[in-house]
Image (tube, rainbow, N blue to C red; front, side):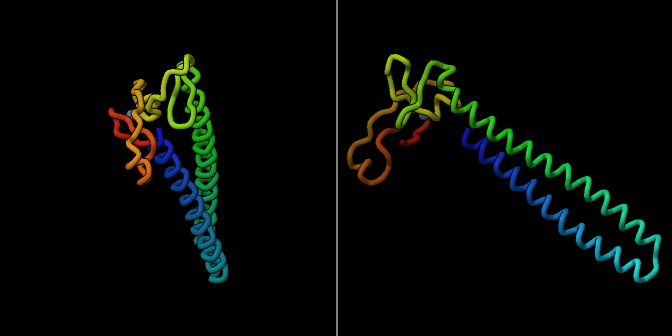
Length: 143
Ligand SMILES: [Zn+2]
């Protein structure tokens, strides 16, 4: 699920970048329109005005998409947090535990593959080297 969120975060950044680009292009259009008026080319001024309207509509739609993506990320995070409770599991410290206290089980395997893989305690030499306290034999994730 981490990959899904990273992917969504990138999309939000892309949508915000599109909004910024449209704002920049709109400011260029304003300068073009002023120039066309000073050149007394009203046909060009009208075309640039139409272009500005189109840009404004696109900017509004891109902003709406940015808001929608942000809401979806928040909703996705809420679902992820409640996922363990739905399955009768609770996340604590390093992994998921059953309601009977059995565990810890790998969070990555549980959330992404619906598998209950028991975490194994890492040897102290790895723990002191900063590799984490537990590891998963299935996905090799360390916690
Ligand atoms: Zn795992």
